[in-house]
Image 1 (tube, protein in one colour):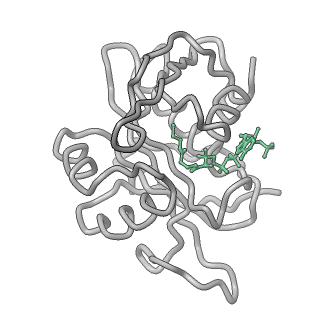
Image 2 (cartoon, helix red, strand yellow; image 1 turned 180 degrees about the horizontal axis):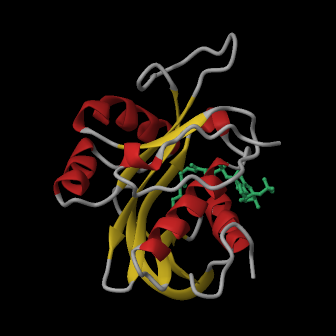
Image 3 (cartoon, rainbow, N blue to C red; image 1 turned 30 degrees about the horizontal axis):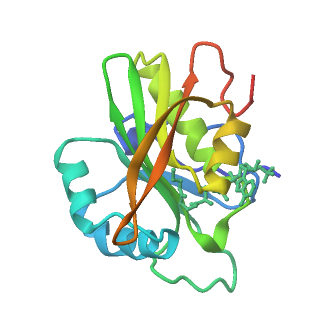
Length: 195
Ligand SMILES: CC(C)(COP(=O)(O)OP(=O)(O)OC[C@H]1O[C@@H](n2cnc3c(N)ncnc32)[C@H](O)[C@@H]1OP(=O)(O)O)[C@@H](O)C(=O)NCCC(=O)NCCS
């Protein structure tokens, strides 16, 4: 199914091109996160993670100038909006950090109510396009070893495991969990398709 992307890149400072297709017929747009969105984003973050980012994490990311992008969707007829943003559905968001010739994905989250509809892939497509535009040659990220859905997403997208950080994440009061380090070479990959 085709999306009806309405995003005007100039609306996003020209930073986030909208990929040509998404799997659900819903008009969507990207827009940079603002401090006023903090409550809605934190509410979704808490629903999405056992160990959510705090408001401070998002504030620090914004203050550091990291790209923090919301994916907003037009409400469908009869749809109840839990924490609307601009009167629209907050489908997901991502936070990235630019390096010299790479981009580090710090957070990618899709609302539990809208999963398995291709939105994470859509976000990754936008990230890959934008990163290429920034001159980056690779994307990289860390993911919890136990995060099967996210690992499946990244592997399906074409990311490869390139390392393991032992005990990287807190996991309850006393335990730690390993992080799998994954990367994607942008030079060799067509957005949205595993090589
Ligand atoms: C991981 C996450 C972002 C995936 O979002 P999503 O919008 O549901 O993912 P998509 O629909 O784009 O899925 C794309 C592909 O990823 C894989 N995938 C995604 N979720 C999966 C799951 N629960 N189980 C197995 N494979 C999965 C599939 O290959 C899927 O393609 P398919 O649906 O055609 O089989 C979402 O589950 C989420 O927000 N989780 C909580 C936050 C999180 O863990 N973020 C990652 C931190 S590193």
